[in-house]
Image (cartoon, rainbow, N blue to C red; front, side, top):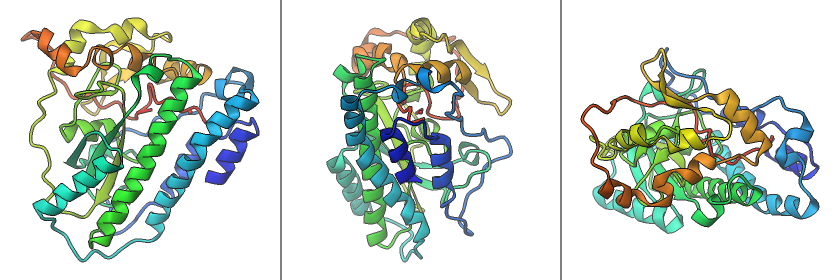
Length: 348
């Protein structure tokens, strides 16, 4: 499947990212430890737009641009393939609890490999997508940052290439961390970089790495929305999961700002997140987002214009007083879609 996707891109055809992800999902670890979705869980947002080939930006590249894409696609697909293969080699763990020293070393390794922020979460069942499963309910969550100069060109091929680089780094890091955990006697399975079987932004927020903004993306200290997310599922029972999140004031700011709403060329971001039947909130009209996204190199305008991506988290926080009546709700976007930059025909 991974080889077919790469060949299709290089041949100028339109491979299906949804089929790629479904193929990866089929390697899922089904055992007594598997965690299945809640009845109220959302389905993973599909990436297919149904647009004709001539309207798909990634299918209309010249030879030089195809070579640029190939340089990102080869390591990305290779590391994804190796990561998926770990699900076909389930391990019987000999360890269940990790020492503080081991976890400190794990975090140091993650950052050495290129992770920016790192946290832990016990995955709630409503964060597992409908009809999917995860091998364990404990997970490591990490971010990788994206270069501001490239993101500032959005929507453009340069921006999309930077996002693809981010996904490649995530696939590599997740696989290496899983191998490190396995070597120490733990069970570990990397999440799929392009879009997994659980809601990465929701997990990252629960892990205290940031807060989901009105554009449906995680906003973090330092890079703001200029991050990508991935996970590693593990059997470690004593992970120091976050008990609070100091970043939730971000949605207070979003309620006043709404620059992403005004700047979205597809008008796909709701003025205020809409209630979902499962108690969460939805930020994006995925149909509107998907078509523009497909026609314009994955767009990412919402990432570019976010004040947290431009001015920086600390500067925004220092200048914002907030207001006591700001809405307090849980945003669960359903999939990392806006600004993903993936259009391998592809968010977060």
